[in-house]
Amino acid sequence: MEKLVRLLGVLNLGLTFTTSAWGNLLENVGASSSSAAMAGISAQGPGSQTAALSNPALLSGSSNRTERLKLQFSVVSLVPSFDPINNVVTANDYATGTSTPTIVGNVDNDYKTTLGTILSANYRFGENQKWGAGIFAYIPTLQMFYSDSGEAYVPEYILHRSRTQRPQIALGAARSLSSSFSVGFGGQVAYSLTGNGNVLLSQSGSNPSAMRFSASMKPLLQPYVGAAWEPSAKLATGLVFRFPRTSDINFTLNSGARVLGSLGALDFNLKAAAAMSYDPMSIELAQTLKLTDTLTTIAQLDVQFWDKFEPSAMNIECSSNCIVVVNPSKNPAFDFRNIVIPRLGLEWKRPKWTFRSGYAYRPGIIAQGALSGAGNLLDPSRHTISAGAGFTGAKFLEFDAPYTLDFHVQYQSLVSEKVTKTSGNEVGAAGSKIGSPGYTVGGKLFGAGLSLTLQI
Image 1 (cartoon, rainbow, N blue to C red):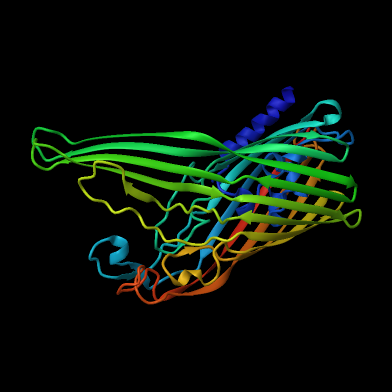
Image 2: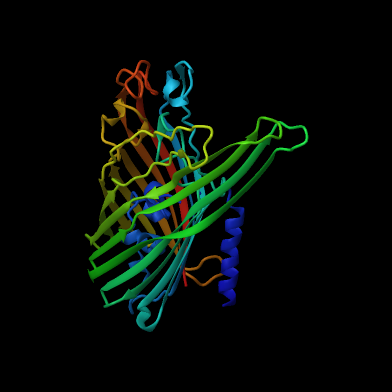
């Protein structure tokens, strides 16, 4: 126990001095280096190291496994680089609601770098280790929390602005039903944010202006279930079903302005709502096949149901007592499509080293050609190529515990797409749509990271 306490102290020191990552972490970055090195495969194989998030069924063990406690500490990063979008319409009279003439300029493509730390722990207990439990925690290092709803009409890569810039916590538990089959249940924590503001603006010399703001966050849980089947030493299957998750933000503003001295105030109450983040319902199926004693291939198929996707644009409406008439928001409407993501990984084991590589193709959730009308929500398809290696040792520092040190590099290439806007503004009147005359969508992302795993 004393060594365990000292070991946790070492990991905590690493968390403290790591220099600078809620969204789908598995898809965008990878929950560990071994998973990221195989293009995000997580429902089997490398998913056991972060099973509380990737597949809770992998938390339980069997009598042929000796380790009970598994700890992992990771540092992950992802650097985006999107193609510039310059010399396009960025504002017009429809979007601003004024007589502002058409403004031509450059679009902000400066998206934040993901850099964060991950700490996960898995524990097996009970007779023959048939029970298992685990926790997964992801902490962004550059900033503790960041959310940005984006602009309603300006070109925006909707799944990259702040998806990996918020903390993430997951809990899981599992039970082995036989020597080869186990089931697990997990939950990923999300939050809904509610804010209220009261503002009184006064022009009277004797009455001051005043403002009060309050906010609260309510935790929510996104459940998911998993299963793992290992009929032989050469074959293993993992299956995960995730329910959809939405983190909402709701803000109410009660305002008044004393424009006639102390005679009275003109009141207007506004309500704004948005989805801070959204993860779709998904099914992940992975199949591991051991080709030889040293060579293993893993294939995974993800089905993601994006047809209920809620973009994070703010919706504003007048709630009651509106002396000042406010038009409700009119955000662009898109038909989001469900997608299938194939992933393929290869693992080659040597006495102390393990080498991995992977490939994945993720279609965009917006059909090609849908951007010619109003709105510029961007999500091009992308290819992911990754590679990594892991070294296994018998003793970590002064602790008699086997360890593995993994690292990976990853390259994501966004499929280039040419967008050409149709004539007229967003409602077909005279003028030009935001994004006119057109632009090219594309770019790349570079990822890297390392993981330290200890088995006790």
